[in-house]
Image 1 (cartoon, one colour):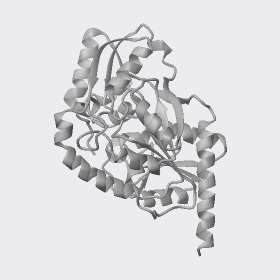
Image 2 (cartoon, helix red, strand yellow; image 1 turned 135 degrees about the vertical axis):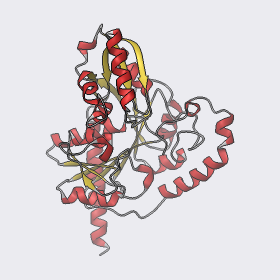
Image 3 (cartoon, helix red, strand yellow; image 1 turned 90 degrees about the vertical axis):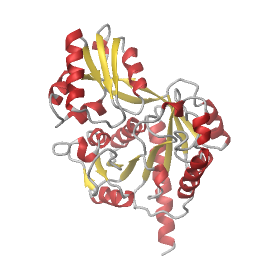
Image 4 (cartoon, helix red, strand yellow; image 1 turned 45 degrees about the vertical axis):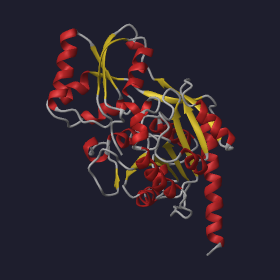
Length: 346
């Protein structure tokens, strides 16, 4: 999967999307057939999958964290399962915050590991089994909906209401990971994040398909000290403009931005350029938590940039505070029925 989405993916379909249409059709056939896979291997505990309709940037990681927090509040021991995109390790690994770096395990797993037990694995079943062996009684998959490597008891697909599904075309002509109709058939619910209208057609389609539609917003945490500050924002995430809008919403005066591809590890020159520019103009540096964790062990003045960059933390706030518990309850009920069916067929 590409780490930087072409800009034409997020505009009205043009000649580039239509020129790639035959390849998109082929990709869609393969991706759709994976989703239709009838029998998937499973683990004995409930599995919740938090995924995206499109390539990156919808808010699945903070959503997964919000569900894990709700699970912990109920006395459960959730465990995160991630592919570890952007990392170099190709073996099933329990993430250790004190030992691992983003280049080894990926940046998002480091954020997840701050909240709960986290395992990275290219093989989802092996990763889920590792979590169960480590004591997890609820598996939360951060992405992996389209991989069809593991049975999930509840699949929640997240969509950003400002971006929607872009031009609506399947990769490589657009950002959609698999045919929308097939994704909706396999999903249990849709969750919108934000107050835009780019996802309205998708919401109506989900409602017609009888899928639950949850709503939420992304909110900053303790960002009041940025109000009135002159700042320089830098980030390397799937939707840098979304982060820059978040910075502006804190009341800060955003004068300079630096955007990089998703999961990008800054070079020594890039680190120096950001620091020198901010120092010359006396701007305060701000970035995301995901970008901050990638700086640990980085080249040149990476440690200095990490120390000087104010991290803007965000969290998901559901319009209905009961939503995470409803998702967990549905997953637990589904897993119990699945396990009973398994016993009956032995």
